Length: 569
Image 1 (cartoon, rainbow, N blue to C red):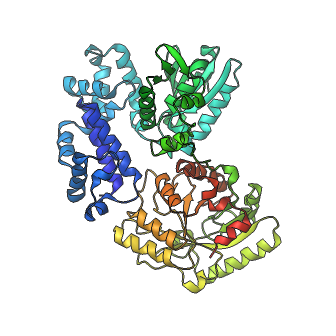
Image 2: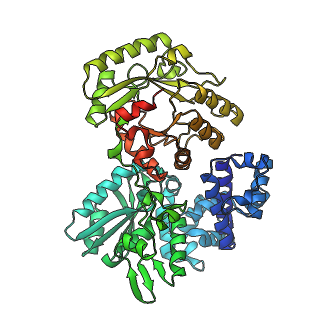
Image 3: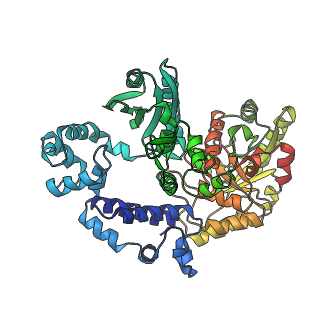
């Protein structure tokens, strides 16, 4: 029962309590506890084994600590099981429908005994819902319009998938003569790994022109709702988007409000209240008088804070930094000078050595490492010692003829299930760059995972641990490990850690990367490119680093070649 699983249990518990109309402060306590558990590097099971008082963790009181202990010891939570027996799981799906929410889902369940989306659809088609108190025909029509997309709307989409859609729509709206400002908001603006519904804020002299332009956009499949200043549409790929047209005097306040996160905004509102002010999406007010609202900067300044970059707005220490004007200058894509994880046709890449080098040069890289797979990855035609040495000779021959870029002979070396490395030391000693990774056996117990990683970290030839947990977002959880111990060992042995920039990996995730920074571990953002176009994902790794609060100084491959080569073993 690792932290992620415990956190998901608390989220489900909060959802079920919301259906039952429980105390909102109690519900919020479970959601806050979930965030706390996702954000710590130590596993709570280990903390309990060591006798640590869990109430020392932020947002964890005695009751929550006891429930965590119950989950760790038994694998289940009695309260959650009781609630699941009372509320069928399909009711949670109903709750998440646009315009429904927990109260209406509870009414549908209690009054009509509707327990899933199929039953809801049948009731709506029969006209039974509009007769319920608090409902109307408009609600019933909305349910029918949205229910077939409900399964898709539960799924989150990779940021990288949503990005080109958002950019095209922003470009279209920004080109309108009536439009002054257009900006995405929500989790998209915070550059989260995955996004749900999308938000766009606009200031314009002609609301109808803006809404018509969105409604007629090639990427829009259907207009779901249209009001005086708000429009909701469904895009291709099942994504839904809210457009809000706001007055210029409120644009900054609306940006702050709709960017979130919810936890960040709660602190902002409480901060305003302590100053006898009110903060909402329309502005910052002292009574009826507007204090700030036109720009985000003036809203934060009026509350005694430096402007907080959207990626940091998660209530994870940003307020203390903003109060003291110590927010980091976050790394940008322009800071990146090297790419140290890529593949060629020698294993499972689609481009030759020459093509990968040329593509890196075109992207402004000053140094790269070619890191094809070791032999354990048979499905990728992994390299044994003889083939690898031949491959390195080919790399050196090409590199000697190439000007303007340094090319390292590297290897992505598997850390095997028996806690040995996939290639002998005499081979690894010849490498310029050794990237050690977990690919197989990710379900081994954390003791064995720890042993495997420590084997790599302590090996004097290993430069870096690549995609350290091995997770695939939404498909495969990472290996269970004590990340704090792994990071401490990496710091002690001067081993770097990777943020793998592929949108399905983004591993290390932000909280672990922030912990690595605190230990002084250089982070390398790499693309893991298997083609020349694969190098373009570097931006997503940079976004992940920004969410971790990393500056260029924290990123090893933001250094010049002269500076970087001092880190090589």
